[in-house]
Length: 313
Ligand SMILES: Nc1ncnc2c1ncn2[C@@H]1O[C@H](COP(=O)(O)OP(=O)(O)OP(=O)(O)O)[C@@H](O)[C@H]1O
Ligand SMILES: [Mg+2]
Image: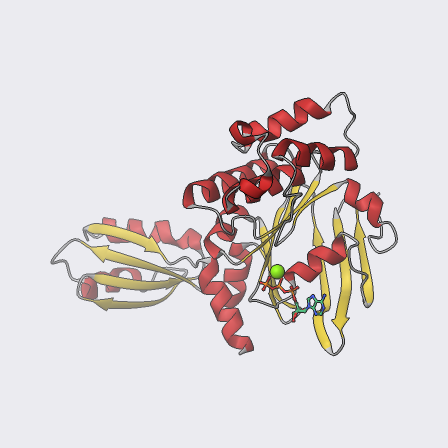
């Protein structure tokens, strides 16, 4: 047995001349929330389908739970939950009947089924409409039912393709909280395909940023930022009236300080590493410069995403 839940090497899938997945290599650890980000057509959904054995690859290798999804798709899918991009339900059946049906398909024992169905209905706040036909549901209710369906058999690996699309802000937040808990509390592994960079920043331990079927960058937010912008900047604002120009003289010679620029009461300081920042602050304070604000410049996933995609344009 391998410790990785997913291992993909040089994975490829073409549709005619279109290279939807063009040589991806990555691994996913148990308990991770792993993001697949990228513009429309980048290959996110195709990757999810390949990993679940719904599509065969054109080349490359993949292992999910040490199984080959292309040959052992059914075994893989027994351990995965998939929320597809455009989930469909049996519209003429009720929410409860839909969950009973899918719960049975995933192998939940008949004796446990009613309890699991009730738990899902109440968790996703569908209990009051449990026996109504799905065709009478709003889009958000259908999306919540689709999530319930993906989770009903408590799969150790969950694929969520745009889970908050079509949800109102409150429901979206609820789903995001749920995703955060799946990994951290239940030890479930989550593959999250999304366009929402703020959600991804909050939820994902690592992300793969894709474009045209290729991985442009892979890692945690911190790793990606460090790769793109290897220097650390901190902005210091002095209390109104204090001269940044004279303050800069007191820190320029500090070890680890690379560059200082001063304007009015603001200092922009480039340091070798974050650890230097407290020393800079101490030196300023020791020289009686009144400090109002210290702000290390940090990068968002959005900064990283656009910097990478711009490089591809
Ligand atoms: N069944 C198919 N037949 C032909 N082409 C396909 C098929 N499925 C996907 N493609 C193509 O593969 C490429 C990747 O599509 P995919 O759906 O994986 O992108 P995506 O990253 O999920 O995009 P989106 O953000 O729009 O959901 C696109 O160019 C798409 O047109
Ligand atoms: Mg997609």
